[in-house]
Length: 375
Image (cartoon, rainbow, N blue to C red; front, side, top):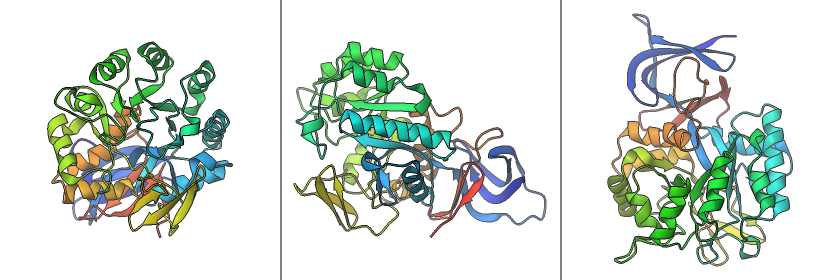
């Protein structure tokens, strides 16, 4: 049955509109038109649903240990209640068996019509042991043909792979890109020449800028400096107040240009729950207020959601609301090739919508035209 919603303010992914009616049917937007005279639209802001390209878990589920498509449905539902309507379940460094299971789960979930799963992000295992962070060293390894075959499976949708360019050479990066894989660089101690060669080979972005990567120094820009100076690559930012100092985040936004920044959550199972600890590949991770730390005291993902990241950008960093919303929707969609469908409100596009109050807090969410229950 057709549905519609009238709102006082609409951000369509690029532009603001006032007093607009959005209509949809069978999960797709059919019309975006002005409200009738005398109509009383809802207060707040209607925006495209958020697109999160780095989601390790949520709703008590860790993607690495998920066993059933319903586990993915729980993870998606937890983030949908917080405004994210499309995501990449992210598998951190693990065995080939776990990687294969993860991609099969994503394929089966998509086949069953579970909404919101745009593909899979493999964060590792082809990373630097020096910059591994909370990734288990025992599973870090070079890229072999068996993994290349896995990454080439088109039925999973988007395939995003984070690699260290000192581990995966330019020839392999070109193979990956030619097979349709989106390659980001991260968890790396590479020098600027190595990073630049990877970008030249087709790598197109950086995973959680500043975190687990070679820093900018006087004599070698490293991965951070190369990322900030490269005009075309995407940069993921975790704006939870722990992964980045606000001055560092503001520097990145001012230096690199806000139109190539992408908000990511790096979320773990506690998101959307009251869970206080969980096991990450044999390592106990505990929640300390709004941060997660492992037994070594390292940050181990986050309890962030993209709605909170948007508010941090506007409230703490002075980012304009439209740019913060763009960094949570259209820009991540563009970064992984989803912008033909995601990150916009327009006729023919998906009815993936989030209604925010004037403080940009999530009030209601629709995925494929179906409203998601909120706590």
